[in-house]
Image (cartoon, helix red, strand yellow):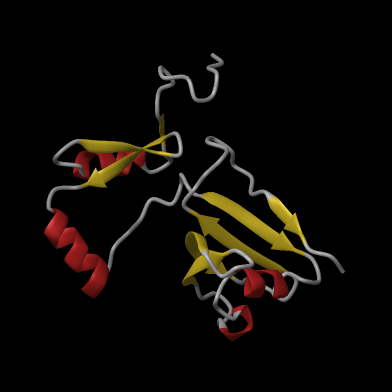
Length: 142
């Protein structure tokens, strides 16, 4: 079945974790996250906010666009795009960061995963290709 993108009758797609999150969504509060059905709240907004700030939480990142930044400039590019320095991030670590334009205005936010010297991976909350299992690659100049 093919449905035109953006059509008002396009059903929201379930994420890969939907079968696990659906029973936990006691209020059945679902929303559109880049074409995917995502839980807006599982039951208690105050408790969830407190957990985010002081304990541990789990996010379903499926609706987020995944970018693979590859090439000799794989560390320099995110250093220019974000106010963070990728080289300071330990291998296997992750950091939340803002994405800024050349005028230092915030254009998005996301997480940054630096797996190696010549590659970097980032997730942004504004997905553009629901259902895609591959990450767009941003090639940096040599």
